Length: 549
Image 1 (tube, one colour):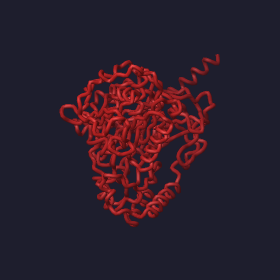
Image 2: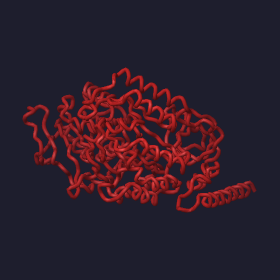
Image 3: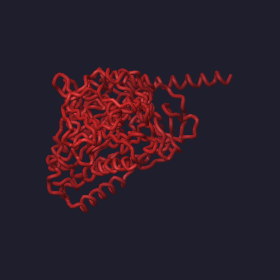
């Protein structure tokens, strides 16, 4: 699978026994040779009647390409798992494939343009194509999707059926949402088999859709209103992933902070349940949350971020530093709310990594409004900043607003980029020591990539025998860049991950800043951690001495 713009084991499950009843209220099947008027919607299809003596299920190769968010990545991993379970070969190149599945993203115009170009590229190579994701869900009537099968965002468990019918020459479209007890459900079962892009990382979408109505966003047109999975289903999926060897768990959705509001629970309740089953040497990363929802649970979230098996990392999109612009975006918070969140988190977890997003050139944004966004970035110096030019997405309210001239949008984007590049979040880090979990290989293939407690990216030499994927190592920082640090490995024989917080945080002089993890003073907990660490180091010395004898 190819993943754009972000993030292997699979069980013996039967496709038709995945726990959620099929919903075919919006299934379309037709042969592209028939007239458009013959297209049948909402028909009750007997799939056993569709036969082709020349077709052998599972005897073909499939290429999957995905654009966009980690939710899309997870969907693609599920589809590949189901196809592999049914005997299909998953290949890494279009030229090797009999059929291509293109999983689209509707957030930005460039991503949709790439998606459209790739469809044509596949067709030009005389390959069969199926589309999925947010673009095809929301724009399924688009002319360039005519005569192309579609997998709806809630129907990824139908991928095997749709592939088989497409290979036979039929066009099949599953587009309906899932429902349970007359309410929108989370989507296809979380218990399906997967082929992970990275065998060490499990991505779990805890919900689909959101509660917001942002005027610039088209994702809700595709994903719909909030539909949360149950805590039990999510915890069960996480348990399975750890049993299969995953070391990192990424919690994702369109808005993780809104989780559970439709089923009578909330994000902290879910995360506390997951924490109980995270193995000692594994970590959890919490995905994007909008400001209003984390504000409602800020104290609980701070305690969760302090847990030694949770990365102290949050992605909180602000989008603009101006209240007037936020109002026109229908973001449902003000800048003061966002500042309260950032300052309280940094008060209790000074090194917590907070990522955010800024849209440059929203239709109602004036030069003075934009200056407020610049001031916000100057104030907090976010280590990770996603800078986006405004793109009018068809069908959204913002697309009908009077636009800022394109040259001015580009100019504002450049100013924001120049500001972001003017500071280095990792300056003065040389010589500091961290424990990192190594999970992937760098693009230059010369380094392995790991992250410390604060989800800061640290590279180590690939040739060092102590650096292995899925392992914890202790490193000393020897070089820093804008987006990463380079570490020299000091040790690969480490105590349990619970010592991570003690050595890489408390021992760096921060024990008097954080006040509580379990309502007790952190200073006391720090002393306990340090005592345990000293005992551990002494035991290592004694053990080494005995070996020398």
